[in-house]
Image 1 (cartoon, rainbow over the protein chains, first blue to last red):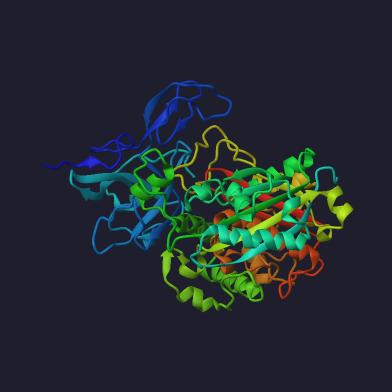
Image 2: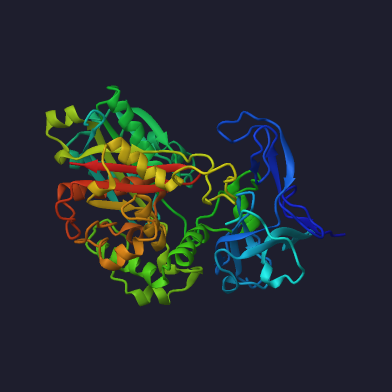
Length: 154
Length: 396
Protein backbone atom coordinates (compact mmCIF):
# COMPACT_ATOMS: atom_id res chain seq x y z
CA UNK A 1 0.00 0.00 0.00
CA UNK A 2 1.53 3.30 -1.08
CA UNK A 3 0.33 6.88 -0.79
CA UNK A 4 1.23 10.33 -2.07
CA UNK A 5 2.75 12.38 0.77
CA UNK A 6 4.88 15.52 1.06
CA UNK A 7 8.65 14.93 1.09
CA UNK A 8 8.70 17.07 4.23
CA UNK A 9 5.93 17.41 6.79
CA UNK A 10 4.31 20.76 7.46
CA UNK A 11 6.04 22.97 4.91
CA UNK A 12 3.21 23.28 2.36
CA UNK A 13 -0.45 22.45 1.86
CA UNK A 14 -1.68 20.21 -0.93
CA UNK A 15 -4.92 20.10 -2.89
CA UNK A 16 -6.51 22.47 -5.39
CA UNK A 17 -4.64 25.62 -4.36
CA UNK A 18 -1.47 24.53 -2.56
CA UNK A 19 0.55 27.07 -0.57
CA UNK A 20 3.69 27.28 1.53
CA UNK A 21 3.05 27.40 5.26
CA UNK A 22 4.88 30.16 7.11
CA UNK A 23 4.82 31.44 10.67
CA UNK A 24 3.57 34.88 11.66
CA UNK A 25 4.92 36.30 14.91
CA UNK A 26 1.89 37.22 17.03
CA UNK A 27 3.89 40.09 18.58
CA UNK A 28 5.49 41.90 15.58
CA UNK A 29 3.62 40.26 12.65
CA UNK A 30 6.84 39.35 10.84
CA UNK A 31 6.31 36.34 8.58
CA UNK A 32 8.94 33.60 8.37
CA UNK A 33 9.37 30.66 6.02
CA UNK A 34 10.11 27.84 6.72
CA UNK A 35 7.92 27.74 9.85
CA UNK A 36 9.58 28.73 13.07
CA UNK A 37 8.77 28.43 16.75
CA UNK A 38 10.02 29.37 20.17
CA UNK A 39 11.55 32.80 19.47
CA UNK A 40 11.18 35.60 16.94
CA UNK A 41 14.26 36.45 14.86
CA UNK A 42 13.31 40.11 14.48
CA UNK A 43 16.05 41.70 16.67
CA UNK A 44 13.62 44.25 18.12
CA UNK A 45 10.99 41.68 19.05
CA UNK A 46 10.96 39.27 21.97
CA UNK A 47 7.88 37.40 20.74
CA UNK A 48 7.59 33.68 21.39
CA UNK A 49 4.20 32.85 19.86
CA UNK A 50 3.53 32.20 16.17
CA UNK A 51 0.48 31.40 14.10
CA UNK A 52 0.59 29.41 10.87
CA UNK A 53 -0.02 31.47 7.77
CA UNK A 54 -0.35 30.39 4.16
CA UNK A 55 1.98 32.41 1.92
CA UNK A 56 0.86 33.94 -1.37
CA UNK A 57 0.81 31.38 -4.14
CA UNK A 58 2.17 33.81 -6.73
CA UNK A 59 5.32 35.89 -6.87
CA UNK A 60 7.97 37.28 -9.20
CA UNK A 61 11.22 35.63 -10.30
CA UNK A 62 14.23 37.07 -8.42
CA UNK A 63 16.58 34.79 -10.34
CA UNK A 64 16.78 31.29 -11.77
CA UNK A 65 19.16 28.55 -12.88
CA UNK A 66 19.20 24.82 -13.46
CA UNK A 67 21.04 21.65 -12.39
CA UNK A 68 22.69 20.19 -15.47
CA UNK A 69 24.53 17.59 -13.36
CA UNK A 70 22.87 15.27 -10.86
CA UNK A 71 23.22 16.82 -7.39
CA UNK A 72 24.92 14.66 -4.74
CA UNK A 73 23.10 12.86 -1.92
CA UNK A 74 20.97 13.48 0.06
CA UNK A 75 19.32 14.54 -3.23
CA UNK A 76 17.29 11.59 -4.52
CA UNK A 77 17.10 11.51 -8.32
CA UNK A 78 13.57 11.13 -9.69
CA UNK A 79 14.68 9.28 -12.81
CA UNK A 80 17.49 7.08 -14.10
CA UNK A 81 19.10 8.34 -16.23
CA UNK A 82 19.11 11.75 -14.60
CA UNK A 83 17.07 14.54 -16.23
CA UNK A 84 18.17 18.15 -15.49
CA UNK A 85 15.66 20.46 -13.82
CA UNK A 86 15.35 24.23 -13.44
CA UNK A 87 15.35 26.17 -10.15
CA UNK A 88 13.89 29.57 -9.37
CA UNK A 89 14.05 32.07 -6.50
CA UNK A 90 10.64 33.73 -6.34
CA UNK A 91 9.84 36.89 -4.39
CA UNK A 92 6.43 36.74 -2.77
CA UNK A 93 4.27 39.75 -1.82
CA UNK A 94 5.22 38.98 1.81
CA UNK A 95 8.76 40.17 0.88
CA UNK A 96 10.21 36.68 1.22
CA UNK A 97 12.22 35.10 -1.59
CA UNK A 98 11.66 31.33 -1.70
CA UNK A 99 13.71 28.87 -3.72
CA UNK A 100 12.06 26.00 -5.48
CA UNK A 101 12.44 23.68 -8.39
CA UNK A 102 10.61 24.79 -11.51
CA UNK A 103 7.60 22.68 -12.55
CA UNK A 104 8.20 19.64 -14.74
CA UNK A 105 8.58 20.44 -18.42
CA UNK A 106 9.92 23.99 -18.01
CA UNK A 107 13.52 25.10 -18.53
CA UNK A 108 15.51 28.28 -17.97
CA UNK A 109 14.48 29.32 -21.47
CA UNK A 110 10.90 29.75 -20.24
CA UNK A 111 11.79 32.24 -17.46
CA UNK A 112 13.10 35.79 -17.00
CA UNK A 113 13.78 37.86 -13.87
CA UNK A 114 10.50 39.55 -12.96
CA UNK A 115 8.23 36.89 -14.49
CA UNK A 116 5.21 35.77 -12.49
CA UNK A 117 5.25 32.25 -11.06
CA UNK A 118 2.64 30.20 -9.24
CA UNK A 119 3.17 27.48 -6.66
CA UNK A 120 2.28 23.93 -7.65
CA UNK A 121 2.91 20.60 -5.93
CA UNK A 122 4.57 17.82 -7.92
CA UNK A 123 6.36 14.54 -7.31
CA UNK A 124 9.97 14.94 -6.17
CA UNK A 125 10.86 11.23 -5.97
CA UNK A 126 9.31 7.87 -5.24
CA UNK A 127 10.30 5.74 -2.24
CA UNK A 128 8.93 2.66 -0.48
CA UNK A 129 5.98 4.69 0.89
CA UNK A 130 4.97 5.99 -2.53
CA UNK A 131 5.23 9.35 -4.29
CA UNK A 132 6.85 12.09 -2.23
CA UNK A 133 5.83 15.59 -3.27
CA UNK A 134 7.40 19.04 -3.13
CA UNK A 135 6.43 22.64 -3.94
CA UNK A 136 7.51 23.92 -7.32
CA UNK A 137 7.24 27.17 -9.28
CA UNK A 138 5.31 27.24 -12.53
CA UNK A 139 5.33 30.19 -14.97
CA UNK A 140 1.83 31.72 -14.94
CA UNK A 141 2.02 32.44 -18.65
CA UNK A 142 1.37 28.71 -18.96
CA UNK A 143 -1.56 28.69 -16.57
CA UNK A 144 -4.77 29.40 -18.45
CA UNK A 145 -7.31 29.97 -15.71
CA UNK A 146 -7.62 33.58 -14.48
CA UNK A 147 -6.05 34.29 -11.11
CA UNK A 148 -5.51 37.33 -8.95
CA UNK A 149 -2.29 39.30 -9.29
CA UNK A 150 0.04 39.59 -6.30
CA UNK A 151 0.55 43.01 -4.78
CA UNK A 152 3.87 44.51 -3.81
CA UNK A 153 6.22 41.97 -5.35
CA UNK A 154 9.10 43.39 -7.31
CA UNK B 1 44.98 55.85 13.48
CA UNK B 2 47.43 53.09 14.38
CA UNK B 3 45.99 52.26 17.79
CA UNK B 4 44.42 49.00 16.72
CA UNK B 5 47.06 47.93 14.20
CA UNK B 6 48.86 44.64 14.47
CA UNK B 7 51.86 43.64 12.38
CA UNK B 8 52.12 40.77 9.94
CA UNK B 9 55.48 39.27 10.81
CA UNK B 10 55.40 36.44 8.31
CA UNK B 11 53.25 34.52 5.84
CA UNK B 12 53.52 31.11 4.25
CA UNK B 13 51.55 28.65 2.16
CA UNK B 14 51.51 25.06 1.03
CA UNK B 15 50.76 25.05 -2.72
CA UNK B 16 47.13 24.36 -3.67
CA UNK B 17 46.39 21.11 -5.50
CA UNK B 18 44.67 17.78 -5.16
CA UNK B 19 47.36 15.96 -3.25
CA UNK B 20 45.15 13.64 -1.20
CA UNK B 21 47.34 13.82 1.90
CA UNK B 22 46.36 14.59 5.49
CA UNK B 23 45.48 18.27 6.05
CA UNK B 24 47.91 18.42 8.98
CA UNK B 25 50.91 17.86 6.72
CA UNK B 26 49.89 20.87 4.60
CA UNK B 27 49.34 23.01 7.67
CA UNK B 28 52.79 22.24 9.05
CA UNK B 29 54.42 23.19 5.75
CA UNK B 30 52.55 26.52 5.68
CA UNK B 31 53.26 27.21 9.36
CA UNK B 32 56.97 26.51 9.00
CA UNK B 33 57.11 28.68 5.87
CA UNK B 34 55.47 31.55 7.76
CA UNK B 35 57.79 31.13 10.74
CA UNK B 36 60.82 31.11 8.42
CA UNK B 37 59.47 34.17 6.60
CA UNK B 38 59.15 35.97 9.94
CA UNK B 39 62.45 34.70 11.30
CA UNK B 40 60.63 33.59 14.44
CA UNK B 41 61.15 30.25 16.20
CA UNK B 42 58.02 28.15 16.86
CA UNK B 43 59.03 28.05 20.51
CA UNK B 44 58.57 31.85 20.63
CA UNK B 45 54.93 31.63 19.52
CA UNK B 46 52.58 32.04 22.49
CA UNK B 47 49.22 31.64 20.71
CA UNK B 48 48.10 29.32 17.96
CA UNK B 49 44.73 29.70 16.24
CA UNK B 50 43.62 26.95 13.87
CA UNK B 51 41.01 27.16 11.17
CA UNK B 52 38.67 24.23 11.61
CA UNK B 53 38.06 21.79 8.77
CA UNK B 54 34.79 19.84 8.98
CA UNK B 55 35.60 16.97 6.63
CA UNK B 56 38.67 15.56 8.36
CA UNK B 57 37.42 14.04 11.57
CA UNK B 58 38.11 15.08 15.14
CA UNK B 59 41.59 16.39 14.32
CA UNK B 60 39.94 18.88 11.99
CA UNK B 61 37.41 20.01 14.63
CA UNK B 62 40.26 20.88 17.01
CA UNK B 63 42.61 22.16 14.32
CA UNK B 64 44.47 24.60 16.61
CA UNK B 65 45.57 21.85 18.96
CA UNK B 66 46.18 19.47 16.05
CA UNK B 67 48.67 21.89 14.49
CA UNK B 68 50.22 22.69 17.89
CA UNK B 69 50.87 19.00 18.51
CA UNK B 70 52.23 18.50 14.99
CA UNK B 71 54.65 21.40 15.37
CA UNK B 72 55.60 20.04 18.81
CA UNK B 73 53.79 21.07 22.01
CA UNK B 74 55.24 24.37 23.13
CA UNK B 75 52.70 25.35 25.78
CA UNK B 76 51.10 28.09 23.63
CA UNK B 77 47.52 29.16 24.23
CA UNK B 78 45.17 27.64 21.68
CA UNK B 79 41.95 28.50 19.86
CA UNK B 80 40.09 27.01 16.91
CA UNK B 81 37.74 29.01 14.70
CA UNK B 82 35.04 27.96 12.33
CA UNK B 83 33.17 30.35 10.06
CA UNK B 84 32.95 28.29 6.85
CA UNK B 85 34.70 30.23 4.04
CA UNK B 86 35.31 33.10 6.48
CA UNK B 87 37.17 30.85 8.94
CA UNK B 88 40.56 32.44 8.30
CA UNK B 89 39.33 35.97 9.02
CA UNK B 90 37.71 34.90 12.27
CA UNK B 91 40.90 33.08 13.30
CA UNK B 92 42.95 36.18 12.50
CA UNK B 93 40.55 38.34 14.49
CA UNK B 94 40.90 36.06 17.50
CA UNK B 95 44.69 36.35 17.36
CA UNK B 96 44.53 40.11 16.84
CA UNK B 97 42.24 40.62 19.83
CA UNK B 98 44.62 38.81 22.19
CA UNK B 99 47.60 40.73 20.84
CA UNK B 100 45.83 44.10 21.15
CA UNK B 101 44.77 43.20 24.70
CA UNK B 102 48.44 42.70 25.54
CA UNK B 103 47.76 39.05 26.32
CA UNK B 104 49.83 37.65 23.49
CA UNK B 105 53.04 38.68 21.75
CA UNK B 106 53.36 36.39 18.76
CA UNK B 107 50.48 34.40 17.26
CA UNK B 108 50.42 31.76 14.54
CA UNK B 109 47.20 31.42 12.54
CA UNK B 110 46.90 28.33 10.33
CA UNK B 111 44.22 26.90 8.06
CA UNK B 112 44.50 23.74 5.98
CA UNK B 113 42.14 21.42 4.17
CA UNK B 114 41.90 18.17 2.25
CA UNK B 115 38.85 18.12 0.01
CA UNK B 116 36.77 15.44 -1.68
CA UNK B 117 36.17 15.30 -5.44
CA UNK B 118 33.23 16.99 -7.12
CA UNK B 119 30.40 19.01 -5.55
CA UNK B 120 30.78 19.82 -1.87
CA UNK B 121 27.99 17.79 -0.26
CA UNK B 122 26.71 18.07 3.31
CA UNK B 123 27.87 15.73 6.06
CA UNK B 124 26.31 12.25 6.05
CA UNK B 125 23.20 11.22 7.99
CA UNK B 126 19.55 12.35 7.92
CA UNK B 127 19.35 15.86 9.34
CA UNK B 128 15.87 17.28 8.88
CA UNK B 129 16.65 20.40 10.94
CA UNK B 130 19.81 21.31 8.97
CA UNK B 131 19.21 23.71 6.05
CA UNK B 132 22.49 22.59 4.47
CA UNK B 133 21.10 19.05 4.29
CA UNK B 134 17.55 20.01 3.37
CA UNK B 135 18.54 22.13 0.37
CA UNK B 136 20.03 19.05 -1.26
CA UNK B 137 17.21 16.68 -0.27
CA UNK B 138 14.28 18.95 -1.13
CA UNK B 139 15.64 21.02 -4.02
CA UNK B 140 18.90 19.49 -5.28
CA UNK B 141 20.35 22.95 -4.71
CA UNK B 142 24.16 22.75 -5.06
CA UNK B 143 26.66 25.52 -4.35
CA UNK B 144 27.11 26.35 -8.07
CA UNK B 145 23.33 26.76 -8.34
CA UNK B 146 23.49 29.64 -5.84
CA UNK B 147 26.40 31.22 -7.76
CA UNK B 148 24.31 30.84 -10.91
CA UNK B 149 21.34 32.71 -9.38
CA UNK B 150 23.57 35.72 -8.72
CA UNK B 151 25.13 35.46 -12.19
CA UNK B 152 21.77 35.30 -13.96
CA UNK B 153 20.55 38.30 -12.02
CA UNK B 154 23.53 40.33 -13.28
CA UNK B 155 22.60 39.34 -16.83
CA UNK B 156 18.90 40.19 -16.56
CA UNK B 157 19.44 43.37 -14.52
CA UNK B 158 22.71 44.81 -15.82
CA UNK B 159 23.12 43.26 -19.25
CA UNK B 160 26.15 41.17 -18.27
CA UNK B 161 26.98 38.39 -20.71
CA UNK B 162 28.50 34.95 -20.44
CA UNK B 163 31.42 36.42 -22.40
CA UNK B 164 31.97 38.92 -19.56
CA UNK B 165 32.08 36.08 -17.04
CA UNK B 166 34.52 34.20 -19.28
CA UNK B 167 36.73 37.30 -19.39
CA UNK B 168 37.06 37.21 -15.58
CA UNK B 169 38.46 33.69 -15.91
CA UNK B 170 40.80 34.76 -18.72
CA UNK B 171 42.12 37.64 -16.58
CA UNK B 172 42.57 35.57 -13.42
CA UNK B 173 44.23 32.71 -15.31
CA UNK B 174 46.75 35.22 -16.65
CA UNK B 175 47.29 36.72 -13.19
CA UNK B 176 48.04 33.35 -11.63
CA UNK B 177 50.45 32.11 -14.30
CA UNK B 178 53.57 32.92 -12.25
CA UNK B 179 52.13 32.21 -8.80
CA UNK B 180 54.06 29.25 -7.35
CA UNK B 181 51.20 28.43 -4.94
CA UNK B 182 48.46 28.34 -7.58
CA UNK B 183 47.02 24.97 -8.62
CA UNK B 184 46.09 25.97 -12.18
CA UNK B 185 48.83 27.85 -14.03
CA UNK B 186 47.67 27.84 -17.60
CA UNK B 187 46.29 30.53 -19.90
CA UNK B 188 42.60 30.16 -20.61
CA UNK B 189 40.86 31.62 -23.66
CA UNK B 190 37.31 32.94 -23.51
CA UNK B 191 36.24 30.21 -25.94
CA UNK B 192 37.59 27.57 -23.54
CA UNK B 193 35.19 28.84 -20.89
CA UNK B 194 32.26 29.24 -23.27
CA UNK B 195 32.83 25.79 -24.75
CA UNK B 196 33.02 24.05 -21.39
CA UNK B 197 29.89 22.29 -20.13
CA UNK B 198 27.12 24.29 -18.46
CA UNK B 199 26.94 23.25 -14.80
CA UNK B 200 24.20 25.60 -13.61
CA UNK B 201 22.88 28.00 -16.24
CA UNK B 202 24.41 30.50 -17.09
CA UNK B 203 27.67 29.26 -15.55
CA UNK B 204 30.07 26.96 -17.35
CA UNK B 205 32.41 24.50 -15.69
CA UNK B 206 35.31 26.93 -16.09
CA UNK B 207 33.30 29.75 -14.47
CA UNK B 208 33.16 27.79 -11.21
CA UNK B 209 36.04 27.26 -8.84
CA UNK B 210 37.23 23.78 -7.93
CA UNK B 211 37.78 22.44 -4.43
CA UNK B 212 41.44 22.06 -3.51
CA UNK B 213 43.84 20.90 -0.86
CA UNK B 214 46.05 23.63 0.51
CA UNK B 215 47.22 25.52 3.57
CA UNK B 216 48.05 29.09 4.54
CA UNK B 217 49.59 30.57 7.66
CA UNK B 218 50.07 34.06 9.04
CA UNK B 219 52.27 35.18 11.96
CA UNK B 220 50.85 38.19 13.80
CA UNK B 221 52.56 40.26 16.47
CA UNK B 222 52.17 43.64 18.09
CA UNK B 223 53.55 46.61 16.16
CA UNK B 224 55.96 47.21 19.06
CA UNK B 225 57.28 43.64 18.84
CA UNK B 226 57.67 43.95 15.05
CA UNK B 227 59.58 47.21 15.36
CA UNK B 228 61.79 45.93 18.17
CA UNK B 229 62.80 42.86 16.17
CA UNK B 230 62.64 44.44 12.70
CA UNK B 231 59.98 41.98 11.47
CA UNK B 232 57.62 41.75 8.55
CA UNK B 233 58.49 44.62 6.19
CA UNK B 234 56.04 47.10 7.68
CA UNK B 235 52.77 45.43 6.66
CA UNK B 236 49.99 46.13 9.15
CA UNK B 237 46.48 44.80 9.59
CA UNK B 238 44.25 47.89 9.66
CA UNK B 239 40.89 46.14 9.85
CA UNK B 240 39.27 42.74 10.13
CA UNK B 241 35.54 42.77 9.44
CA UNK B 242 33.69 39.72 10.71
CA UNK B 243 30.22 41.29 10.66
CA UNK B 244 26.97 39.32 10.62
CA UNK B 245 23.96 40.38 8.54
CA UNK B 246 21.45 42.97 9.69
CA UNK B 247 17.80 41.86 9.88
CA UNK B 248 16.13 41.36 7.53
CA UNK B 249 18.66 39.63 5.30
CA UNK B 250 16.78 39.86 2.02
CA UNK B 251 19.32 38.40 -0.42
CA UNK B 252 19.11 34.63 -0.71
CA UNK B 253 22.22 33.16 0.93
CA UNK B 254 23.73 29.70 0.56
CA UNK B 255 22.61 27.25 2.06
CA UNK B 256 19.19 28.75 2.85
CA UNK B 257 16.00 28.13 0.89
CA UNK B 258 14.42 31.49 1.66
CA UNK B 259 15.17 35.04 2.76
CA UNK B 260 13.83 37.02 5.66
CA UNK B 261 10.87 39.26 4.92
CA UNK B 262 11.48 42.75 3.55
CA UNK B 263 7.91 43.78 4.42
CA UNK B 264 8.98 45.84 7.45
CA UNK B 265 11.73 47.71 5.55
CA UNK B 266 15.25 46.78 4.55
CA UNK B 267 18.70 47.79 5.90
CA UNK B 268 20.63 50.51 4.08
CA UNK B 269 23.22 47.98 2.91
CA UNK B 270 22.98 44.38 1.83
CA UNK B 271 24.95 41.95 3.95
CA UNK B 272 27.78 41.78 1.43
CA UNK B 273 27.94 45.57 1.17
CA UNK B 274 28.13 45.82 4.95
CA UNK B 275 31.17 43.51 5.10
CA UNK B 276 33.46 45.90 3.23
CA UNK B 277 31.86 49.00 4.75
CA UNK B 278 32.71 47.78 8.26
CA UNK B 279 36.30 47.15 7.20
CA UNK B 280 36.67 50.62 5.65
CA UNK B 281 35.21 52.22 8.76
CA UNK B 282 37.54 50.30 11.08
CA UNK B 283 40.58 51.19 8.95
CA UNK B 284 39.52 54.82 8.60
CA UNK B 285 39.89 54.71 4.81
CA UNK B 286 37.58 54.49 1.80
CA UNK B 287 37.40 52.47 -1.38
CA UNK B 288 39.26 55.24 -3.23
CA UNK B 289 42.36 54.45 -1.12
CA UNK B 290 42.54 50.79 -2.20
CA UNK B 291 45.32 49.73 -4.59
CA UNK B 292 44.59 46.02 -4.86
CA UNK B 293 41.80 43.61 -3.91
CA UNK B 294 41.58 39.86 -3.37
CA UNK B 295 37.93 38.82 -3.58
CA UNK B 296 36.20 35.47 -3.34
CA UNK B 297 35.58 34.41 -6.94
CA UNK B 298 33.72 31.17 -6.22
CA UNK B 299 32.38 31.93 -9.66
CA UNK B 300 33.60 34.40 -12.26
CA UNK B 301 30.37 36.39 -11.93
CA UNK B 302 30.76 36.59 -8.16
CA UNK B 303 34.02 38.53 -8.62
CA UNK B 304 31.95 41.22 -10.36
CA UNK B 305 29.47 41.26 -7.45
CA UNK B 306 32.28 41.67 -4.91
CA UNK B 307 33.85 44.58 -6.81
CA UNK B 308 30.55 46.43 -6.40
CA UNK B 309 29.98 45.23 -2.82
CA UNK B 310 33.40 46.70 -1.91
CA UNK B 311 32.26 49.98 -3.53
CA UNK B 312 35.17 49.89 -5.98
CA UNK B 313 32.52 50.93 -8.52
CA UNK B 314 28.77 51.50 -8.55
CA UNK B 315 26.27 48.63 -8.83
CA UNK B 316 26.02 47.47 -12.42
CA UNK B 317 29.40 48.93 -13.45
CA UNK B 318 31.74 46.02 -12.73
CA UNK B 319 31.49 44.67 -16.28
CA UNK B 320 32.64 48.06 -17.58
CA UNK B 321 35.65 47.99 -15.24
CA UNK B 322 36.49 44.51 -16.46
CA UNK B 323 36.11 45.44 -20.14
CA UNK B 324 38.31 48.53 -19.62
CA UNK B 325 41.08 46.40 -18.13
CA UNK B 326 40.79 48.32 -14.84
CA UNK B 327 40.79 45.10 -12.80
CA UNK B 328 43.79 43.61 -14.61
CA UNK B 329 47.29 44.03 -13.16
CA UNK B 330 48.46 47.40 -14.51
CA UNK B 331 44.89 48.74 -14.44
CA UNK B 332 43.26 51.20 -12.02
CA UNK B 333 42.26 48.65 -9.37
CA UNK B 334 43.69 45.16 -9.97
CA UNK B 335 41.47 42.40 -8.59
CA UNK B 336 42.77 38.95 -7.70
CA UNK B 337 46.40 39.36 -8.77
CA UNK B 338 47.05 35.97 -7.14
CA UNK B 339 44.84 34.40 -9.79
CA UNK B 340 42.05 34.06 -7.24
CA UNK B 341 39.98 30.96 -6.71
CA UNK B 342 40.00 30.55 -10.49
CA UNK B 343 43.65 29.50 -10.22
CA UNK B 344 43.57 28.04 -6.71
CA UNK B 345 40.28 26.27 -6.16
CA UNK B 346 38.86 26.53 -2.69
CA UNK B 347 40.49 25.12 0.44
CA UNK B 348 37.87 26.46 2.85
CA UNK B 349 39.70 27.07 6.17
CA UNK B 350 42.85 28.27 4.38
CA UNK B 351 41.33 30.55 1.78
CA UNK B 352 40.77 33.77 3.71
CA UNK B 353 44.33 33.42 5.05
CA UNK B 354 45.64 32.85 1.52
CA UNK B 355 44.09 36.18 0.54
CA UNK B 356 46.05 37.84 3.37
CA UNK B 357 49.27 36.07 2.33
CA UNK B 358 48.88 37.40 -1.22
CA UNK B 359 48.23 40.98 -0.10
CA UNK B 360 51.25 40.81 2.23
CA UNK B 361 53.48 39.83 -0.68
CA UNK B 362 51.88 42.53 -2.85
CA UNK B 363 52.45 45.24 -0.24
CA UNK B 364 56.05 44.14 0.32
CA UNK B 365 56.68 44.19 -3.45
CA UNK B 366 57.47 40.45 -3.43
CA UNK B 367 54.68 39.17 -5.72
CA UNK B 368 57.01 38.08 -8.46
CA UNK B 369 55.43 37.92 -11.92
CA UNK B 370 52.11 39.37 -10.67
CA UNK B 371 53.15 42.50 -8.74
CA UNK B 372 50.77 45.44 -8.53
CA UNK B 373 53.20 48.36 -8.76
CA UNK B 374 53.40 50.51 -5.67
CA UNK B 375 50.58 48.79 -3.82
CA UNK B 376 50.25 50.24 -0.32
CA UNK B 377 46.66 49.36 0.64
CA UNK B 378 44.88 46.09 -0.05
CA UNK B 379 41.48 44.66 0.86
CA UNK B 380 40.11 41.13 0.92
CA UNK B 381 36.46 40.10 0.71
CA UNK B 382 34.78 36.83 1.44
CA UNK B 383 31.64 35.46 3.02
CA UNK B 384 31.08 32.28 5.00
CA UNK B 385 27.90 30.19 5.11
CA UNK B 386 25.33 31.10 7.77
CA UNK B 387 26.17 34.81 8.07
CA UNK B 388 29.94 35.21 8.33
CA UNK B 389 31.44 38.37 6.89
CA UNK B 390 35.15 38.45 6.10
CA UNK B 391 37.13 41.45 4.96
CA UNK B 392 40.69 42.31 5.92
CA UNK B 393 42.49 45.56 5.11
CA UNK B 394 46.28 45.61 5.03
CA UNK B 395 48.50 48.64 4.59
CA UNK B 396 52.14 49.56 4.80
